Length: 235
Image (tube, rainbow, N blue to C red; front, side, top):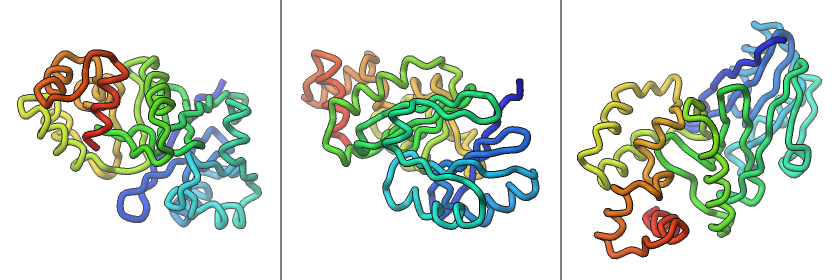
């Protein structure tokens, strides 16, 4: 059985889009880098089968129309994908997780060891809760945390420098932040879930260091849910 791969494309200032591909076919996820994606497909002799998005915010959908116009691909909206829970490419399953929180229609795509997270989870931080649904956002993050530590996080934006500045502000002595920044490459932006559990305060609501910080700030921290809400109030 063929193993699917993922290629990252940068567009606008800090947006990140992706192509999931096999030997002969592909799926575009948040394909704003239209010219680069079409060139990649042509060079690899790939046929685009689907155009999809991690959520419906305008900065993740600008490439949809052009990609559909220049390929035989079909568009699948977020609601349809959430209902299906999966996509298939060259006989391999791509798991689609509904992860409401940033928006009501937010999705993550799980391809082998890679999780394409859109604006649900960034490298070192999380998305704003534009939906206002903090509880479901909390459940979405909890779902992601059940994945293996080796899971590679491919996010919807490159916010690494800003997120690490926030992390260092909260934990000036966290050497993991410095290590992560030393390996940061804007040409290929990623982290592992294991790294996130060292550097991302928004995932570490059960970490004693984070609990102490919240307590010292006078924020509620007796329960996991309180700690999540307190961390979200720092955004």
